[in-house]
Image 1 (spheres, rainbow, N blue to C red):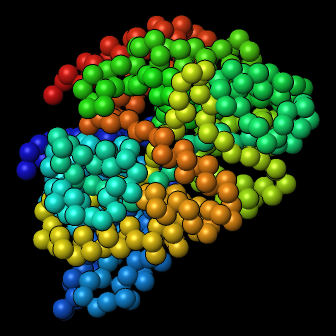
Image 2: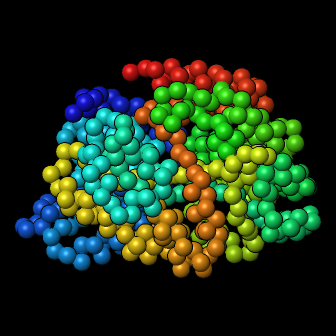
Image 3: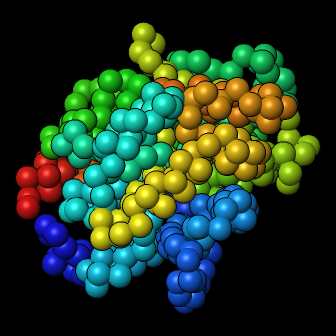
Length: 426
C-alpha cells in the first residue's frame, strides 16, 4: 500500500501537531479485546470519543436488531486518534471502520488507508442529500473514500437582553460586517464587549474566522489543495476587518487573539461579551446550563455584496483498506446514515444530521435555533488538504495580526509563501 511505510514517522508528527486541531473532546476510552464469536462477524470500529458517545445507543440497537454482525466501538481520545490510527495501519492492525475528524480524511485517503467506496456511494438513493462540503472531503482524484457521519457548523450567537439594553432589535441580528461592527460598538460599554472570539488555538480560529474569509471570496488553498491562496486581497480584507474590531474599534476583549474556545465562551456566558461565533453544539449547553440567557442564533455576517459562509466540521466514516468485512461495514454505515440514527439519536442530542432531507425534524422544530445551523451547513466549507496539520501550524501566525504586532497583509502573504512550500513538498 503506497506510502504506508512512512506512517510511523507521520504518526509521530501528527501527535505533536494534533493538539492544534479544531474538533473533539479530550475524554479517554479503552480498546475491547474480545475476539470473534462463532457465526457472528465482529466489526471493529474506532471513533473519536465524542462521536463514540453518540454512537453508543445506536450501536446497541444495531447489534440487537440482528444476529449476524456485532459492532464494537472503541473510543479514542480525539487528540490521539490520527497517531493511533497511523500506527495501526503501519502494523497492519487497523480496525474495520473508522470515524474521524473530517479534516484528516484527505491525508489518510491519499495514502491508501481506505477502501474505494465509489460504486457503493454512487448507488445510494440519498447521496444527493448528503452535505456537499463534507462529501468533498472524502474524495481523492474523483473517487469516494469516506462519507459524512456527523456535522458541526458555526454560526453567530448573540445575547438578546444586551441588544434590548442598547436599543437594538433582538430579532434583527447583524447581517453584514458593517452591521456587526456597528452593533458591536453600541454593545461595548463599561466592562462589556460587543464581540468575542478565540484565536489561541489555530483550529478554533479556523472554525470561527475562516467563514469571514470564504464569504468574502478568499480561501487558504485552492479546492484541490494544491495552490496556496491565503494572501489574496479577499482574505486580507477579512483579516483586516477582524484586526480592526480588536485593535481599532476595541469592541473585542484584548485577550481574544490568545483565547481558547472556552475562554471566549465564558466571556459570553458571564455577560462580558454580547456576540460570539460558535457551533451548534453550544445550543444544548446554553439551554441546559444557562437558562437565564435569552440568546439568538444567526448566520455569520457577510461583507456587503458578498455571501454568507460557515465552517463544516464533524466526522466522516470510512472502511479500512485491509478489512475483509466490507459488506458488514457498509451495512453499518447505511444504518448510521438512516433516519433512525441521524434524527432520533443525533438531532435529538443537538448534532446536525448530514442529510438535508432530515433537517426538518421534530427536534429542530421544537428548538428552531438548530434550523439556523442547518441553513449554515448548506453554505459551509471545510479546508481540503492532505497536509492539514502542517498548514495549521502556519495558520497560527494569524495571531500576529490580531494582536496588532504585524500588518494583516504581511501576515497572510508570508503564510501563502510558507503554505505553498508545504504543498509543493513531497
